[in-house]
Image 1 (cartoon, helix red, strand yellow):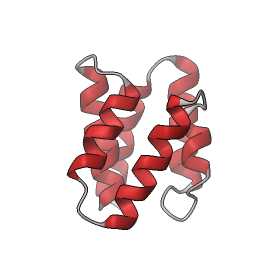
Image 2 (cartoon, one colour):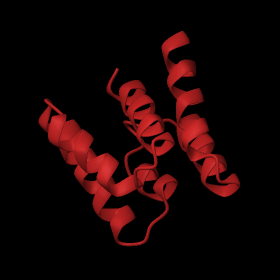
Image 3 (cartoon, helix red, strand yellow):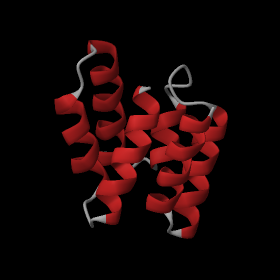
Length: 95
């Protein structure tokens, strides 16, 4: 799914030292589905404007579940966002 791929790619990019916004923009540029491209654009724009990632994701509840947003929020809070994203990817894949 797009959300699992988003979590996996964001986790890998963050582990490699990339910043959040450029990582999301890169995924946006690769997105095929216009609706997903639009969601990624909005999330990147909001984070660029100072919102936390979990806050930007919360505006797209149809795409990002409460569990997803909660794990991202915890990862942001404890400085382990990359690890949290990778865990989310594995969790979504197992479901």
